[in-house]
Image 1 (cartoon, rainbow, N blue to C red):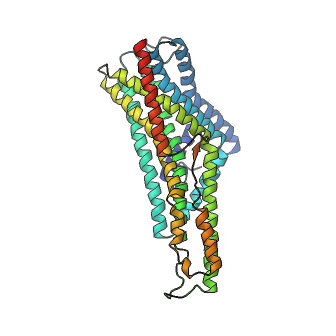
Image 2: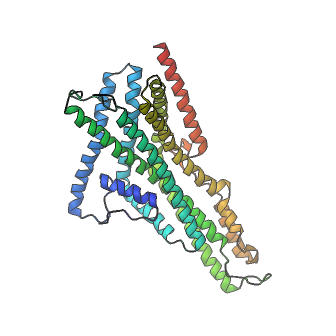
Image 3: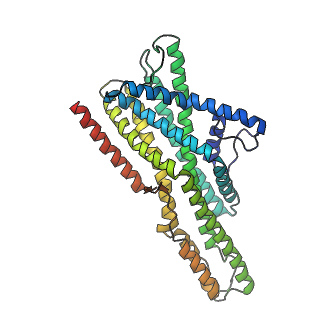
Length: 397
């Protein structure tokens, strides 16, 4: 049983390792006898990180119902935890399909040969790692700001507890639990979101590798400037084309699996994110009235964090859609091969491949909206509209 989860992509390796040690990604080679203990550890970890928070925040929401200022102060973390709990449950329930999906993509990327193909894989790895690092930095600043902005004998976040949290040692123990659970849960949230966005990026990377393979379909053939391909070269080109068709079908199946596994959770995440961004902006406007600058900065980075969470889904989905259909990227690669030196039958086969690769491979959030930059802007606009409504309600109250 290795310490790190092995994968060609660095961000997936980090995400799965974090989930493994948190109890939400059982090792492949775990002993069946230890598997029961791992499940018990998972349940304890869930209660420590999210379960306890959900209970005390729901109770607190019931107690403060009607006070808009206090409700928004509890709601933005409550909805975040609800969304994270749903994503964790989805991850655990679909772990077998995810393992198969990860193994399939990992095998394709590890099997890339040639300098140009390896550069494509490395570019995908670098881009997803940079996204994960930026997300991680925003999360660190946010949680550290919350932990440091708590006033004397007050907790960083609102919640109801069945005891007096202003007295020692109850205050110190509760403070440590809030901060510790917040840090771990926040980093796991980064791990889950970047895992999905990286899987989308890997699907796009597979299409790029396919494009490269199609453009090199006739490499080493027809050395003469006006010669047609020989029967042996035609046979080799047909074999390469069949491999490309198989790779394209595998990439489309990977996109379909992503749609099946993450469509509904992504739609829920988008709906919750609209509410979170709205109430966070409302809280940020309230914090500007105070002189707690640490809290102000942390709330600002949290707002950026929530927007970035939606952005990475929409950006990667948009790039996949653009590369797979609108820009005709894969079909353009096929056009770069020596099709004009092939016989009529192979030309028709290549034409069919070019037509098929122009069909879209778009991902959607439960069929309501596609993952695109336009959807991201629509979510931000909707959040701003809800924010203005909250402000008007507060002014009337």
